[in-house]
Image 1 (spheres, rainbow, N blue to C red):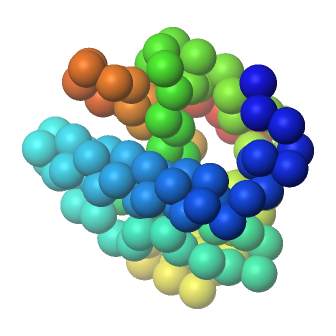
Image 2 (cartoon, rainbow, N blue to C red):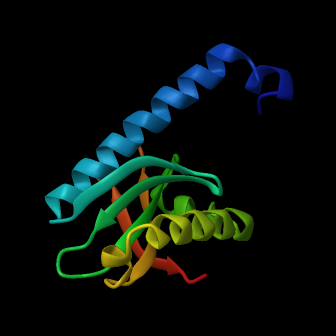
Length: 128
């Protein structure tokens, strides 16, 4: 396991940032193939950041957390209660400024990205 000093190294942070951006691009493409419309990427609010905001076909607005892990099944488990609360607050701020979207309802999804595998879309993973 990497030490704190190694994790904080600028090159490691840059590599993690690139990996995250790549994973979000793959997740966005996967959702588009499934008929979702991407409304926002890397949405920043004062409550925090949401990786993807997507409109489900004939359904709710989805706030999507993208997780890249060695195994897809561990990705959904990696979003803890504090992160869920932060994402829910950011989603609430986003919807407050868009009443038309808010009427569609919302849900919280996770897209898991693993090497050498198709993305896995977990729908309605938690409720705030």
